[in-house]
Image (cartoon, rainbow, N blue to C red; front, side, top):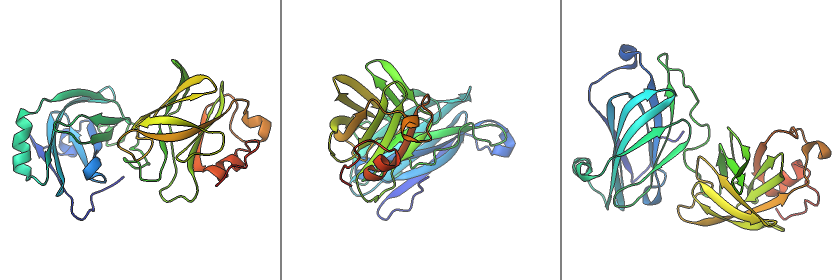
Length: 291
């Protein structure tokens, strides 16, 4: 989980409303990470909130300031009901001015279910996102905060809790994540096995036999062998804030047991790594693609 340790950036988180400790309330809490993107990319902060509390989130540098009021209205049934108002300003604006400006921003209501990524509109433009989990009265998280970073790093491909569809039919719905590490030598890639369709390889760079997929943050769309596929992720698939491309290869006849790979034939699976290594490890026939 990222914490703030940035030169030239400032972030401040304040709580409004009654002051209550976890020991005093013995009530569920909502633990979350708020992140900013674009000109403020890399800024993040963490908070633990109880129902009927409000937090002011403030990110600022010389180019952009984003302030948001996050009100946790209720926590029940494994979800948090939120009301969020967010506003951005060009350049560096102080916290007090930013907070006053939120009074004219329209609050939006969300029901947040861990551990999906919630991308929130910002009046004036900008990128603000939230990832969190619910803790019970004893402080035990119902779902652990993701081990993967709240933000996708440059040169990284990441799939978090992906849903993969052909047309309107769901081929795979995985409650796990896979990501290449930043700075990985070679072509960063993720292999996804869908039992009814075979193996799919997604990579950041073009490679032999692959087709381009259009990507916008959490969604990738591509046409492979005359079928339309959609890949949805709870986190941005790559580190580009605007539309970008990844590259996909479909191996329809692939079955793990036929090539001695330990994945079960009847269950969706996923693995990340350098393209050349993935193709070798998964024993993809004709895996002579460049590194």
